[in-house]
Image (cartoon, rainbow, N blue to C red; front, side):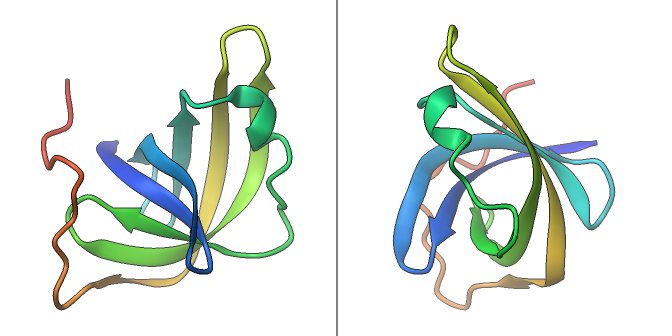
Length: 101
């Protein structure tokens, strides 16, 4: 599994500005948010979101499952990629490229 940090966007709106995630396969994986587990339960699973990876790649995903925790403020999600991952031509991501091990 390869780890990453990313932003989750709904159109041009940033839904979660910093998420930790991993790819279980080339087209699926998981995300973890420490910005409010309660809020994550409201994410729709019937439409795509845009995931902006720290390395400049972007792609559409569908959230397939949300595991929200109101006690810790942490949400864990599973996702499935929709289409190909594309590297932004002029990507200058403000997110760090190192993923803590």
